[in-house]
Image (cartoon, rainbow, N blue to C red; front, side, top):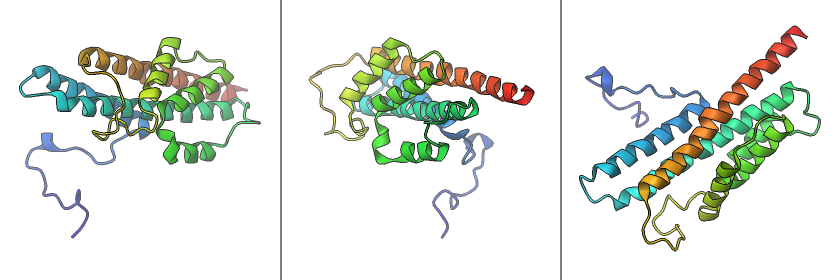
Length: 199
């Protein structure tokens, strides 16, 4: 019988193909979720049908992209800690990985605080205060990481939401982490590698 994906017939058009596993870890998967949020926003803006049911899928995609970007940044930051020789009190990379995969690690607030602490230890620029504040507010709205997955899990007093503005907040936070922090960590990791190679 085979697995579901492997049992699908060969596509007739190459444009219909997606390569399974074509990800650079959580980094590119995070980008995929944020891009999915953008696509849901575009569908919402089209207004071609009643679009209120798109709200939670839109938020979920952006939020999950942010979670994955935070986790990837934590992984890279911990690698930098170990490469820089500041690892006497730091958890091992495998301990961090196990921690990030635990059920409790879907909470963006603690992930953001953990990342901020490691960036501070590395003496690198941290998350901007407004981004950190916004992520903590997101944590308050979604303490378990499941508020946007089910219709009855969202606890809010809001009756109406400016979807475009909300999506802009999500996209900005994602871009700060994915485009800003991860790029900074790439540069720092290369610098540490070069220092060790020449030293």
